[in-house]
Image: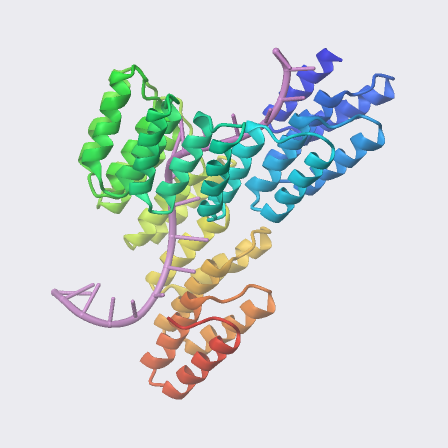
Length: 420
RNA sequence: GCAUCGAAUUGGAACAAA
């Protein structure tokens, strides 16, 4: 049994949930009953593939087989719901567990708070925290890190700093995740002085920065226009024996692309490959976008070919960047070709893809085609947003067709999209 | 403890400016 569980967990960890599930069935067929750990492991596997409904099916199956879910099982499902923003269902599940006499533990609360932060309900997360401060499940380092990260993402940096302070007063030691979350927020908010203080505090506590800490710092520096400094940090991390990973490279590549350095960025991709760090879809998308923004869509198209040759499957972002790139060059034929190609490849265009093409048609003077595309979009169940409408309104205006522009303005309001 | 929680990376509009 133990052997099966270890093996099943291994398959889940390498994203082979299906094989894990087959093993579970094989176990049953050979007369060995899967236990609560087996089920929880596979449920976790499904949850991390965002297949929550499949996870639920297995959950019901385990109950049918008279295997009682425990706290870990519930927490696993809870996490699956929270990661997918299904907070109402999460609360229901919490009630259900209480009903079965399973009191939520710190894992449950930490999971819940993470879900609330992720869905923008940070104040509710803070409420959970405050209640727990009074109750018998005091916040741990994970709770604090979750909330600090959430406050940062909600642009509430001062509150994040205050909470960090409170944490230290409450004798709960921050760890590398806590420091990194706060430093990341401060960097992105362009409060570098304070970010440095956090790094110094880390050093004092002998808490070593890891690859996430450095990557986050590099990204923050890039996003606030300090690519040179980011490059210095990149060198420093290597000196200190922390190996850059694909995220580190991607951040720097993005920074270079945004600052006239697309060619250096391309070189950096070569360099990463040479050091055995393989580019992923984000690397390719970043570079394709960088080239497109510089009016170098044909080169981006070649990179698009490279990525496919390396079995990196283009996604909706890849296509959107390319479509935008060719629209910018007013090569609307090529843009449309790519749009049809993505449909053929089974990649669904989203509101961004459509909007770029609508804009492309407009700038190429093909306002009627743009209007037709808007209809096509609605027909394919993709809701236009302010961006889409604004492009088309602008297209009509620039073509001197003010009456139609006004009509469209009314239409968008009628469709529940408020003009800004 | 054979299973559950927290931190980093990619795409779109108008106006103004050139």
